[in-house]
Amino acid sequence: MATFEIKTKRAINVQGEYVDAGITVQISSMFSNPFDEVDKIHKAFKRVHGIDLKQEGYLSLGWLKYIL
Image (cartoon, rainbow, N blue to C red):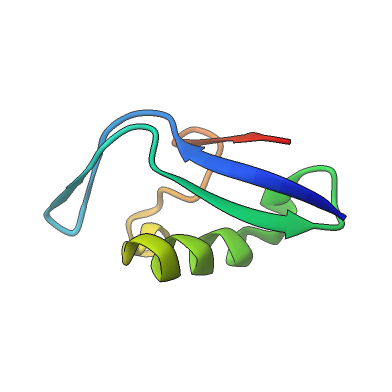
């Protein structure tokens, strides 16, 4: 099982809140691409930073990047 660090690529506006580039969370996944389990990424950002990226449509490789 691999641990991935998911990071925002650039500053974004989430429900009126400014979210800076470089905000990170960590998830573990059995897949080689953590975006195969996008719900885990959504829950991690909500739990750690209290932001809902799913509602705004920011849960994609256009807005986020990952490091193994």
